[in-house]
Image 1: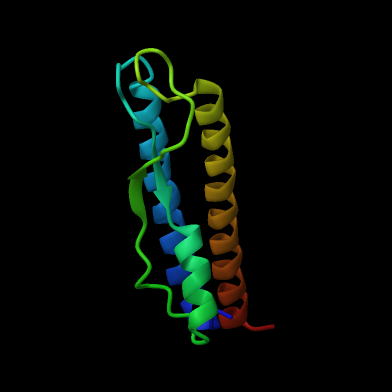
Image 2 (image 1 turned 135 degrees about the vertical axis):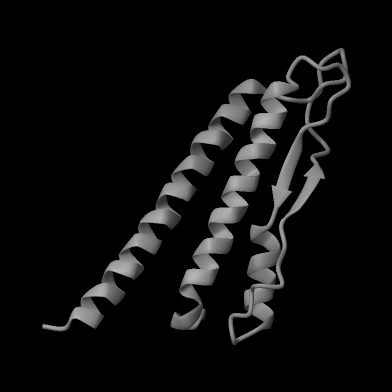
Amino acid sequence: MIPPSQHVDTLRQLMDVAQLRHRVISHNLANVNTPGYRRLDVEFEGELARQLARSSDGDIQSVQPQVVAEEGLQERADGNNVDVDREMGQLNKNATLFQTYSQLLATHFSSMRRAMEGP
């Protein structure tokens, strides 16, 4: 469980990862016609889940996203393994996650503002 005092830092970190993932997906799309290009992906959520399982204090600031070449995908005759449909699906999913994180952050700040203003 993440302590309430770390919500802002956690949401900021998740938004940073979503922003990095957006850049990586855009890079993949820009190289869809580059022979031999290997699709890149961002690994973060798996390590975040492992860190949360290990640490009961919710210290997730040490978890850093990793940009890795994804293996095991079907490739075309030119050696490129980028699938435009898959990238567009990942882009939409990532945009939805970013919007969710920003809405959670806005809700958190709104709650804090109401608490400070009082009844």
